[in-house]
Length: 307
Image 1 (spheres, rainbow, N blue to C red):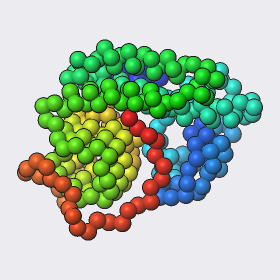
Image 2 (spheres, rainbow, N blue to C red):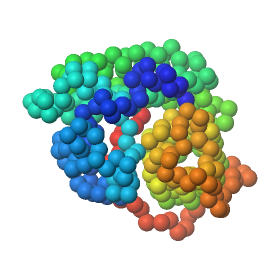
Image 3 (cartoon, rainbow, N blue to C red):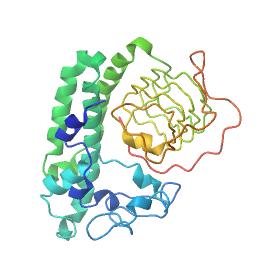
């Protein structure tokens, strides 16, 4: 995992105090298990105060907005607010609002790529591609500092695809000694993976919503873009998991027995004690989901595209 000092130097740690509440205005959300109401893009959330702070920040989960608690702009909000638009808010200069809302998602995606590139540079086994990763990180950072006209018209997809190839190579190098199953993009919603041996597995972009991962071995698994909303990680081992973000942990359910990478914080809503019957690792590799009795699919709400 990248060091906090490195992330801070790159501006990849969110600082809501320097942001104009852009995630609460620019982005849309739909009434679902993640949000209590509908909100269109460009429409301020009803909970946004005049000072750009959330009026229910301490009660978001209780008030039906758990989706807000797991969103991370990777520092894009303050960059767009303070650098791209030079500290002038959409309230002060309403004429800039539409462009600010258009630029924010672009910079947010670029910052997310920077976060993954920073982590890849922290992977010692990926040293053969460190020079390429550094060039990609520098170029992505340069792109985030372009003017409004450039950012508004910028197509992120081609750049993301090029960076993703590098990230995949870094992942393969990091998992070379214990590469597990390839479950990239797999539909594992509600899957029964209790005690599964998923060490070194490729779970990039996998749908693990509501999956039972109690006691699973996820060491060195590539979790870039994996959807862990409601996944049960009680007793699971995520030590050394690759490209795991704080937002993914926050979206899942764990307990005191869940082992998380040292660079990430144990979510405050997880219980402070181990839950009973959290499961244990399977004695043999390759454990997979049970074929019977999958729970109903939860309604999906939009999630950001990942690498």
